[in-house]
Image (cartoon, rainbow, N blue to C red; front, side):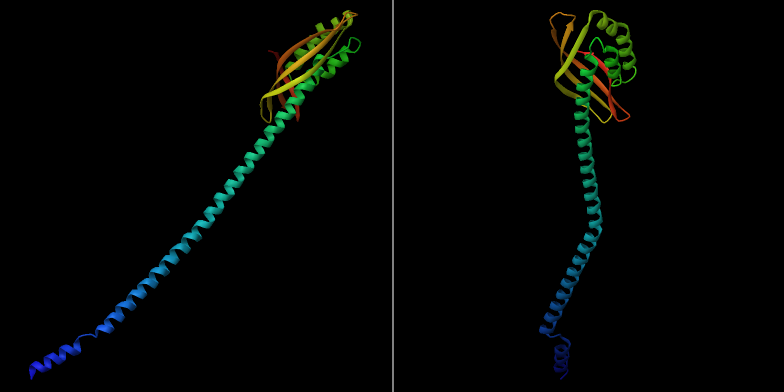
Length: 199
């Protein structure tokens, strides 16, 4: 009899196999749901943290590109302006007529920066103007070509090619060709020649 009771107890104590499988399946499903929620939560947190960082990186990138564009525009403007100023000023300081030499070259001196302006003015006063008046010398300069060597917002170097026609009295005009390295500085918004070196 006692053997029968033991087997009954054992049978009732044992869990049903189907119940056990259901419980394991439920536990697995719950673990999966928690894992998905955790993964979703982690991705959400990651995205929330990454979006401001990405926005900052994009803003920095856009700012840098704008700075590059501004710098390139400024450089192009400096090249164009300095080449034009070097060409026009070269024509002005090398062209004169005997009857108006002082006025012509005084006006040209306004295109020069110190101390080059003072040196040029002295040369005009001591040599060029007296010679032009006495010998009836006239000079006409043209610039067939000019090229930028370097240019920033405040300083530029331009290589200028010069054709000059000089007439002395009633003699036939003579022509000469030369090239000059013109250094300019931007002073009060104007490009002024600070050096004028034949090459």
